[in-house]
Image 1 (cartoon, rainbow over the protein chains, first blue to last red):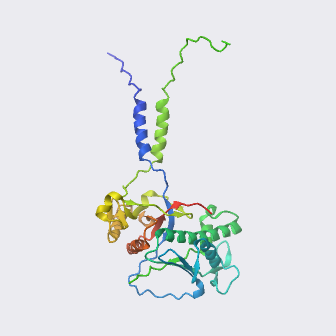
Image 2 (image 1 turned 90 degrees about the vertical axis):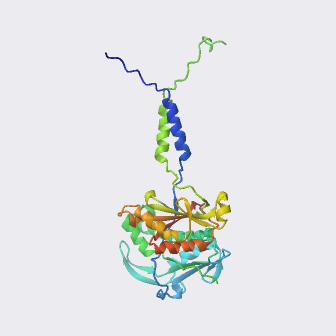
Image 3 (image 1 turned 180 degrees about the horizontal axis):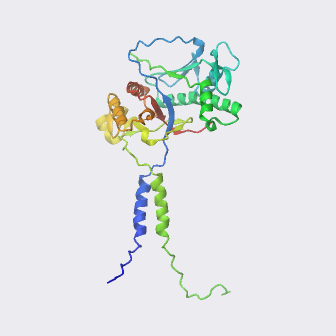
Length: 188
Length: 156
């Protein structure tokens, strides 16, 4: 009556597992997607956007032309210098007349601090290479990130990434990521 | 000198393969867990630009991808060499983007919709004209949170 069930051979188990393993090896892509994160401005229906008056000294104008050359504040510039220029503009350590104004703001953890009113304005041509555009964006984001990092080190003695959310928000208020992108000029 | 040659006739015992399946399974599980399947086949050539200030795309399920680049050689006879947009598995035009975004939005839970990210995978030699058009369409579709996909570049 009680016949023993024959044991299942396990010799082929390795083969089956190998097959699956090879399948996953082939289909795997390990790379994590990463990139520059940005937020686009809200769409406005008509093109009669109200011209917001921003003083000339509060604008850091970066232009990229069709030959991928840079014009920063009406002078030719190299992409390597862009980060330093942008940092200087946003920080304005000496309260220079030509650099952006500051206004006092009440910010948690810091109390009343002078916050810059500077805006970085980026404009590119329709024929600008995407690679150049990203390089410029990268430098501008790097400038703001470095300022935040420096402030975090100075105030909290920690790296910006290790701070609590509220502390990060406070620093973000002092150095907002104000990069405005004008639409490329249409050429006729 | 025959000190070490004891019983030369003894055969080498075969290596036991009993643990082989376990080892292979361990590897298998590792790859199964770390795998992310490619969702689309690329029809365009995309060589991402380099950048240093990267942020990672945390939740894959919230990301929708837009590819822009030159069509691959096998499509060039049909679509030419000018950079094209690819959505899902097909070539698309700028006008299709808003439909694509709406479809992507419909596919997500309502609670997740505000956190959706659009990842732009654009070839570094593309002209900005087409990218600017895409950005305008994204603004119209209110998909404002975007990510310019790029490779990790060297730090200075």
